[in-house]
Length: 292
Ligand SMILES: Nc1ncnc2c1ncn2[C@@H]1O[C@H](COP(=O)(O)OP(=O)(O)OP(=O)(O)O)[C@@H](O)[C@H]1O
Ligand SMILES: [Mg+2]
View (tube, rainbow, N blue to C red):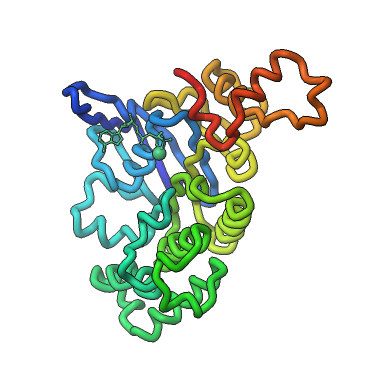
């Protein structure tokens, strides 16, 4: 049974001008347990909206969303909160997603307390919660010294490690990673991605990985879906989609994401690749540069 199975999901928003915007426009997909599905597409194509619909952080207008076989659109608010511990999200901006008034210990413990309130008796003991908080922080590379610190006193990379610990502490099966490293600089990005890959294996996680960065998706994802104006224009294995894109939109996205040509090779660069190189001045946001 796929861990995610969604059929013909739609979500519209009203623009301030009173128009209807089809943010997610009839998407169907299925994700197997242990897989990493990458979702790429330019800014505004609907990636985050889709990620939020999958976890019912947004309410879909129509369609079916099954997580581990459960129809989450039909769960009551209470049932949903009870199941929330299994289906988690990591956001792009770690600082904005962490409560600045709380200590790291309180931030990571909070999902356990919520789960306890919704019947998870294994989190009843305070000592057990502290043990889980400490061991999960250790898994993301943060020692006990961080327990009493607050988010403002941490680097961006450390804040995102806390965000990941908070998401993992309740032992989820599915994690949506919405551009988890795009606010971080390159070296930190690489170490966080390596850590996420290791955690996926050690914890048997399934990831939906939303990204602008095609190079990251190439290394991180087993399958890729290319999103454009609320729809999937191309899906397949990462190798199929990124090495031999069939759709003109994917080809444009790939062309804009070509890495800049090193200066030492500039004498051999031809005119067309020089154009690509200049359009990819900022490779990590290259997807944003593609015009519709
Ligand atoms: N809560 C909302 N209310 C109104 N419109 C919204 C809302 N959330 C998203 N949108 C609109 O829906 C469209 C898709 O937005 P979404 O954030 O899903 O795109 P995205 O692909 O994640 O973009 P980015 O790469 O910039 O994060 C955009 O046009 C956006 O302005
Ligand atoms: Mg987004």
